[in-house]
Length: 344
Image (cartoon, rainbow, N blue to C red):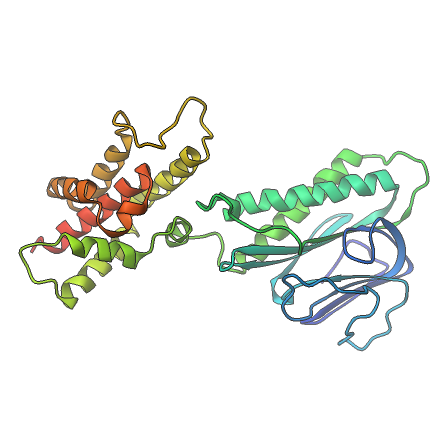
């Protein structure tokens, strides 16, 4: 790992990152035991197994698995799996970010260390702290973590640590180029956060978005099998239907309709569009059926549009639990796929 501060020493393994500088750092952090502003000789980012809900009682002691001398005083913050750590440097700024994302329960914990190769006053450090925090949330939107269908999508509280470090304190002087420095910190943190999330199978594919909406492929197969008539409902037919649904969800046009419906359903549910209320699925809302008809037609042509009407009216299985946009778009997928498997 190469950082922006040339006269600092960096030691890292799979559990510990130690950055030391003979003349020290000026730091600002929200980590327990550091707080506010502090002058330190060492910055320690360390991992102790599962971090969720854990706050180190004392930031000074830590398990130094690197077995090197760590000058005091120390700013120590608890991190996560070091394999998810990413560092990004732009000239005089380095952002070191580790993001731990868990799907069930849905939780995200982030550790951000920002190094600035300048002397800065306390006011500027505060602004850089805010820039780093804002950049993290921007990255979550960039990669789709906060765009999920779940309306209380993520617990982002309790396990986030941010540490901003500069070379030393500048007394009562305005920082030249402060705006540009904030922008650089924001860009580095945003990029590092995205890259850390990419190590964890993000951004999501269409199946990830469906999962956020509470819909699985097996749910669609179950619903599809309910209205199959005229033939015996065998294991073979069920497997053909499942394979056809998986195949159809590789079609860019089908994916576009699914994602559009999920996003629109979320906006409707959160009442984000002034003057629009579809909580009661009003009769004058028919764009949902347009979506369903288009999807069924895309998969199996005109005959599937007639099949769509059956599924739209009966709403078997998972369809009965979904909102107006989603029940129709998934009814369209089921109708198209059930039509497709009986073409021969």
